[in-house]
Length: 428
Image (tube, rainbow, N blue to C red; front, side, top):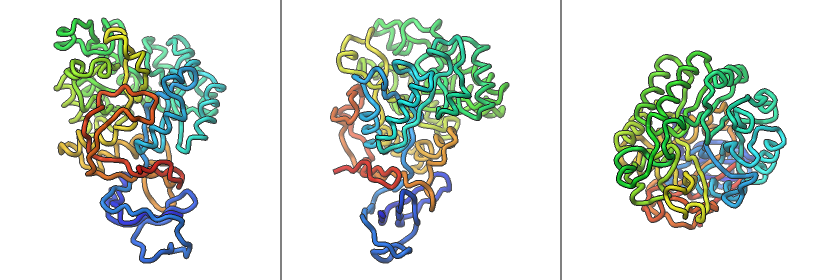
């Protein structure tokens, strides 16, 4: 039994925001309210007391877009090291992408991930592929995989170019009540992925990825979502035009969601000149106008979710130069602080609105009974100091060190991560 005293308890689902106490017992939230003694209202004595004065007590963070590279690419990350990075970042639930080796298009690989995930101390969920082998030619057995434990379906890393097949996938997803997440980049409109096609790519002599590559795919899938009624998640949105298309689809009644990554609301294409390969990603960092459009969409809830697209690579892989290095950066250990620094501190979002996008809304999109604080709910919590300044170093829990934010001073530091009533991370 744990007593968390004097914390600012914030629940995005209900809007509860009050300095009070919270008691955890048997993996659940036992009660929320001021305590006057060293004993719980039930008469039991606390095993541990955490003084959270000056700190926020919130639902454990939920990331719906994660690459742990396991099975098959574990020199970059594995489920254990990835989970350790998640804990350090305040995350209690992660949804893994399916582009491993082998890809997660079968029950055997799915069960491998889920069983290994159970050993981590946090909730590790797995999306399965939409198409067999991520080849974009034939749908997986979505019903069987859903019954086997798939959280949702995605071919993230690759677009699905067959429109008819995409439509069929949406029809099946609607029938099963699951979300489909789409990586939206048409390769026919990309000369070279990873850097926005524009002023900076011209300066660097890099072929670049047109914004239109994203826009045309988002337009297609928003319209298909309207027709089929499927729940569709537009992953790591980066373009102002794509944002407007999602806004329109929502207005028309589509069950369309979108996620923004911290790097897309913090950085622009100019970062490529400063950070090189650690500012190369798919879709790429775009212009300041695109960044501002993403921030406005976060403010008005056109974009309801913040997801990291945590994508670890080794120093050797990133060290081959901008043209040939793989795209992607790590993000789990800096996401909350970037949200506070770039969005809350700058007056774009309130703290509880930021937390809504990191907790309750991701849970709602996936149909998870989590992401909120109430008596009887699972004790998945993060306790963080919203004012503490800290400097990002390369001392990450992740195997990956590929971050453009090394050396940055950020605001907001995770102090405790609690999952299922157990303290799984403590900042010492």
